[in-house]
Length: 167
Image (cartoon, rainbow, N blue to C red; front, side, top):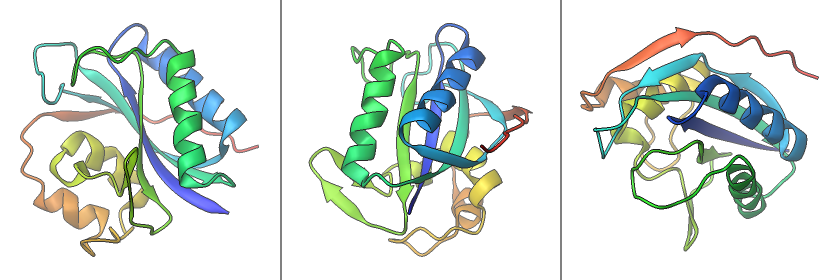
């Protein structure tokens, strides 16, 4: 069984409803969500003049390989109304694979670990809640150590925990 850490987020529409639907679709088509972080309100990164995002980290147990998982996650984004028009622009949903087991994967369509996670507080804060001691397979740092070293000044605020009942 593979383990994948994901970050889900969006800043359009009813963000909580969208994240809930995203979790449901991931659980139905990708595997079991075995851990999830609280919800975090985060400032937009890259293009800052837009509404704040709601983000959440998930730990997924899946039988899918990394490319099949990516394909399924892109399908879920499309199903929920994601369109790719503007880099760093507003979006209803975004699903990123942060880690896949302890693999280092470099393919044209997929880089794992996520190449920018160490510089983005909005990724590290929720991930630290569920994977504090997980070691980055390339740099050897734990998620908690990466968070401590992160210089991203954008605010990340923990909102609330989500109760997760595993099947």
